Image (cartoon, rainbow, N blue to C red; front, side, top):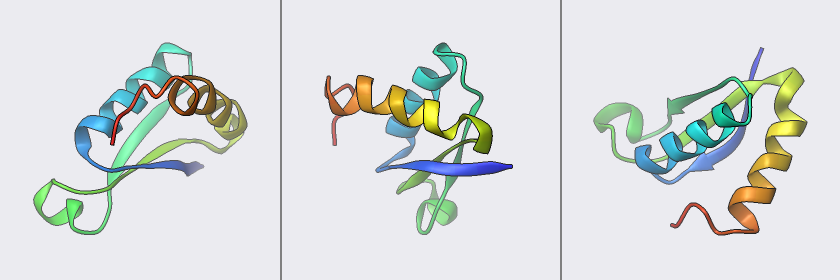
Amino acid sequence: MWTAIYIAINRIQAEKMKDLLCTEGILANTRATGVASLNGDGAYEILVLESEANEANEIICKNVVMKKLVKS
């Protein structure tokens, strides 16, 4: 089952996050939420398999939070 682990502010940030996770061997997907689902510009959920959620969170913390990989 897919679970949301991160909310990106736009599609570009979401794709960067997805690519990062996939590079690390985590199966990831994105899904538009709210206004983004109507016009394509807005928040996107980063989804991973529930069994990989903890590892995905560690990767995000290490690469995004600590290194500021994804800018707002």
